[in-house]
Image (cartoon, rainbow, N blue to C red; front, side, top):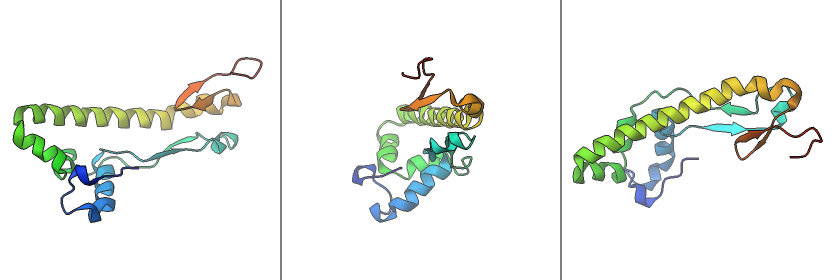
Length: 130
């Protein structure tokens, strides 16, 4: 979960932290997903991407927190480069999560041969032990 703290400098204060978390998801800064291994037994992919495609501006979200807006005031050129990189990284993460949610299903479901440990999928040896 996106959990802002005092140092994030949310405009409007920490009383708006739930709305800020919602904005983080809508902007694509943060993705919501869950992993439920019980779904394997039901023939379903255990990784589920819960958040929708980003619908709000990534940059606007960044600038709604003092930690990012102060960077722009102090180091405008560097800030621009870092904002672009942050957005590219967020898009890459989202793409990877989408891939996991859509393409792993076939490998996991077929014969239940794959096990998950800390987000990495391993295939057990023939004796059944890893």
